Image 1 (tube, helix red, strand yellow):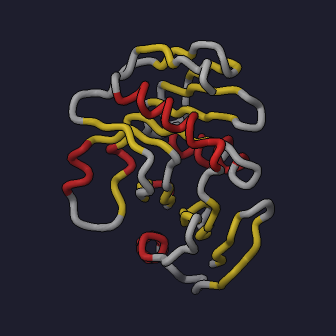
Image 2: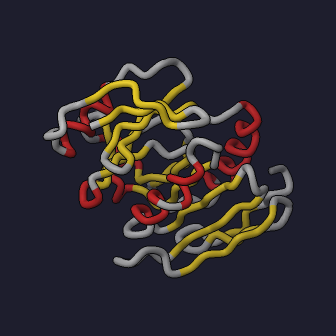
Image 3: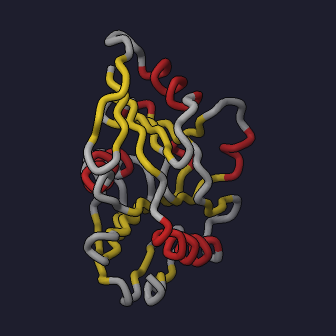
Length: 196
């Protein structure tokens, strides 16, 4: 198994046992002492270390979190704190940029929460994470998470995916920054993207 740091290009930094199980890898990710400004995730069966979002992302993340918080399902909350969510069926562990999750999932012992607790995930693309956000994470979230928002920082667009199924999301809508974007149930409101 390879541990990779994602900057502008993925670079291997260590090798792990090829026989490592999903649970072992997930535990390693959760316990990693990553460099300041970086987070670790389990993507495509590899431990990937990537930088936190750039400063210019902060306002957009805050604006989106504040709007979502006003419309979260009962017992859920919106946050950007770095927590790892496990998707056991796909053998993946992601630390979303922004998420809405059931508060009860954080009453459990351990270092990672169950992906089933998520009602929404938001990923803010960067050069180093764009491929995973638009492909791998879309496939995994599309099996379970009710709503997935991809904030495409390079394209100045936001896309909402919803209606998960065994084959992925059934619906999607994309708007340019500055246009409203409707987020369906369980939220049912329009995101104001004028500040994006």
